[in-house]
Length: 222
Image (tube, rainbow, N blue to C red; front, side, top):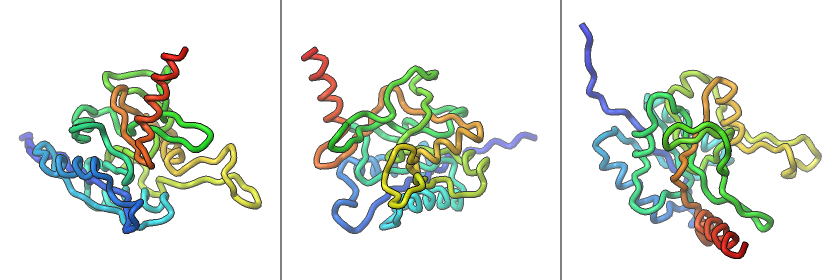
């Protein structure tokens, strides 16, 4: 006799945050947390990862917590990332289907030398609203339990330095989120981003909005 389960998918929502003001949860993200808590499609738990350093440790803690909770999905945010408008981040998980196991949203990144959207649009395969990419950032990251079931032992995130006297940033350095994406792809798990949905990224301004505005201005000037 086949037994049918009406259990809702369990989602652990984690936010990397802290007591100092620059680590506080931004207003848009706080709205997302409220909407997700009311979403009747999912069983949502919340775990703020507070003042855990370095960032690779915080990200590994989110996976460990999701595994201990026996969650179906881990949805993690950096405190300065958010989605536009009244979007519910759980809509992305609901649309993912059974073959999407790692999804990260593109958003603006940069420094004094360059600002850009990462990951950028590329020519990898697409599947509906999703595009396959080599790597995503950790700011808005959705990980299905199949990842830690297949890769049973962490660390899943690790910052890899180029060996040098100073360990200063240099070509060849792989950040903790890049390491994670490389690791899951080695285990046959594809990495996806959303073709239309960009996440915001607050600094003194929203870098995502700034990069998009600069791109539009560049097209008009050209």
